[in-house]
Length: 130
Image (tube, rainbow, N blue to C red):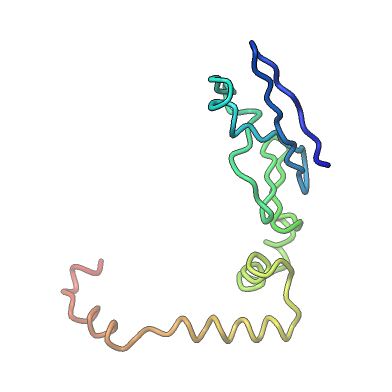
């Protein structure tokens, strides 16, 4: 059974399911509020409203926290490469040495520019590329 909160107004009672957080505070799902009660929410300054649900990123601006897949951004910036962080975001974990080598090879193959596009770019006047 999922936790919920109940909002009562006039003759209407609305159950608001709890959305469990993987980190930080859990939230209340209020998507049916307007349609059921005719009310909206007011959160002046947007201080108590989550903008999205994410399994990848956790942000608490007031506390200065930014994490990707549970790793603090400071740790990733200091100890990981761009490709390692890319792998983390896509697959949910930092790569092993073999996984990183395989991933880097796949990425480099997709970076190849078709020769026809090179010719197209070369045909532009020099002033157009600045």
